[in-house]
Image 1 (cartoon, rainbow, N blue to C red):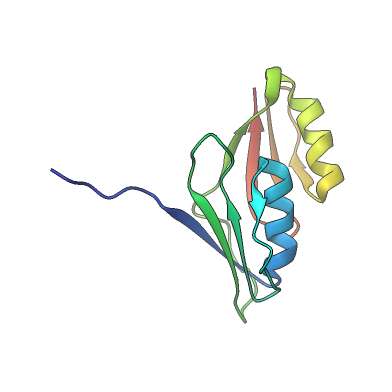
Image 2: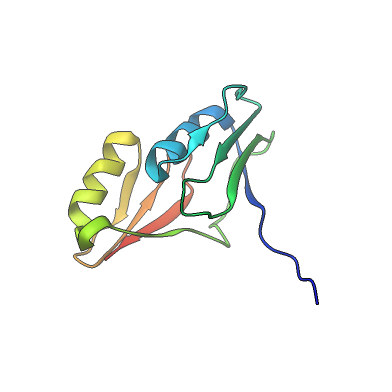
Length: 114
């Protein structure tokens, strides 16, 4: 039996290029050179995960994400990974030694854990 697989995840946002640049840097993916503030694409890094699409929508984010990333910190060093992601434009929502909740530049929530 043939089954479907996740090809890509799509994010609605105000500026697709800003959010795509952040996630490309955060995950080590490649930002497509044709990206604009209306639409941008990030190819998954070598681990083979789904690609990421970002598309501008007119309405602002009004509620909590119903889906979010849980990122594993390299070598279990959550604080170092949080610091790296902050330099890329993320903000800390709820710090913790083993799990930190963060937001990307447009407020999409994600977690960093060991």
